[in-house]
Image (cartoon, rainbow, N blue to C red):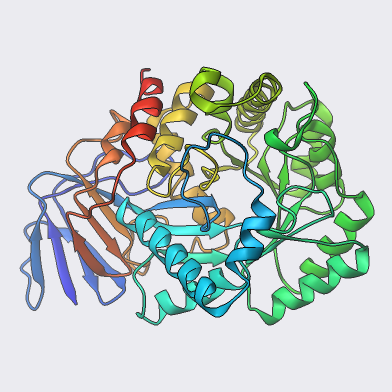
Length: 428
């Protein structure tokens, strides 16, 4: 597999990226071999004429739950019971694994060449990661956490996270995760929008600081980063004070929280997508209660505030769309880039940077992917229009290249109801 991508307009993924023309991207096997002037005489390469289209690094979705399809719900599901049923026998587990593999493929075909999973079914995520790497399945590069760690009655306990009843049990799960060869550890420190039973209390602290500290200490000793679901200021403080490396979601930020982020060298994974429907949709559409809508707005505004202050204070920010939540599909990560531009106020270039080079850097794979440069993985996407001018150009990719393998005109099945409702928020 030796390809020469010519006549394309290159966006290289760096912070100050601008359109580059007059260059050819050469790939050999899984890697970018060189970037050469267009007049270079080529030999042994299959030439791919991009016909003036835009080529950039594949997107990196830093917050994914591969077990979810994003289908709207008329009422809240009892996820723990559903997962217990799915994992109860060999046949249902096989069906569930096939579903998870299909969702991962949707991520890839929509232009996401790397995902970071932060809570999944059993050991499905590491198994799928390895099968994709071995060429047995089609999908993105996966950085997998497998099951997260929650507490009894905590966020996602019993579904995509274990319910640790003690510090010893939580630490033991870190050791189990090591045996599963995970890439990171995930904690569920606070509740979420749908966990709260009263107005104004989303993100209620569920995990004791002592448990957070013990898990982080063990994880760090084993060489792992720790990501944490957090949706309240109290949760952010507890997470950062006790060793968490990335805050997933976030909350309204004060000076002390800014200090902690910087002191601990932590980063923020902004996830606007899951809170937006609960905050901004009419309740007749979401079937949310008044309490859920109120709390959805609290979380949505908190995530926006957290992202704005993080960026203003040079705290690294990456993007995830918490795929699997109602209304959030496995193929719609591009919307998260549009939302951070619209609601946080960043430039299109910065949004692209957060979802490519910056994400790779924070995930610890910056030497492997995230930018278009020699020696890095050939993870590329092609669009007709320029996403620097309009991020909606990412909605339809013309080509995906994953570790050198080219997929022309990728197609995913779109949920028309989800698209129609979310498209109302694509106005600048």
